[in-house]
Length: 123
Image 1 (cartoon, rainbow, N blue to C red):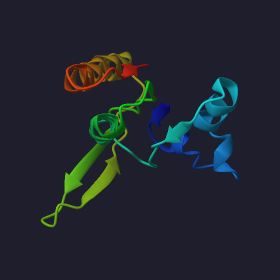
Image 2 (image 1 turned 90 degrees about the vertical axis):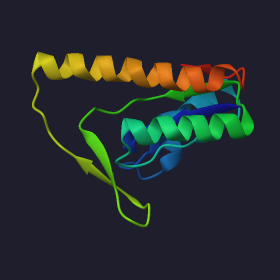
Image 3 (image 1 turned 60 degrees about the vertical axis):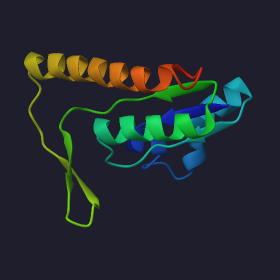
Image 4 (image 1 turned 45 degrees about the vertical axis):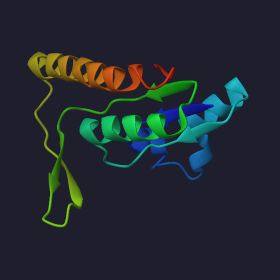
């Protein structure tokens, strides 16, 4: 069993048939059950929480993660509902380095959360 996490690219937002998104293609190639937990507009915080929640729940063999950019933020209202917001930072090399540094941090958090509770491999 393979779980896929990410944003609208994972979800298949712009496709006529969401089964053609990359998790659907992976399912065909791997000939395994693949579950798509992509969410349009998802921030990396959202993605990491979903990874931990779903992987601790069912313990898939593999979790494939497509991190998004670091310019997506979540704001929470009093009723605990979240709102996702995109903020564009430009295309500077500093911004690209920040994306890589923050993505590594999310990998560490998810890896630590899953390491003692599951044998799920993160990719």
